Length: 227
Image (cartoon, rainbow, N blue to C red; front, side, top):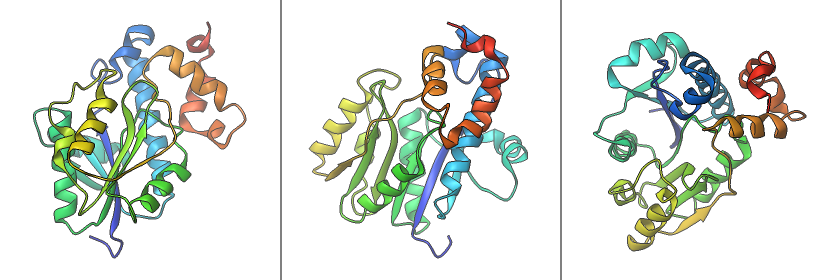
């Protein structure tokens, strides 16, 4: 590891049409949804790169490491996602990074491409005094989760009904049962449906995100945004 005891892990899937953003695929088509997912990932990495801490791209499926590196750049740190479900893969990613010597770790997905850099910084600051930090998503899940080394517990990833509105509640229950202190970040939106896409565009017409890959892609395809 580098001299920094913090790292950001970004969970990324191989952008195969029909295998990413499946809810959006129903409304946009598989090719368009996969193209949009690529923009989401690239914008997410552009945000977390700005923090100045090591960034680890956690890749699924594990056999797609070379493809992902060819897409995102071979100078990045890549790790395979290992485990039978999302929870197992996240738990393994945290364990591996802590084993590498990191003390404060924040994990984000690729579904909130306009995530504010200040929120990720707040997450790291919180881990100086709290065991854990979580960013609630508006769909009942979370867009960010983080732990200090001493505060980590894999229980928050076990028996969670992933992709449901119960994810956040079950995770909070697990943290409470484990006796972990928790810092809440402000809520933020995941982008899973065409309505979410339209909301993303509306709130970013006059922000710095207006020049992002995602916004450029969407502004070139006004048909995707017609109500």
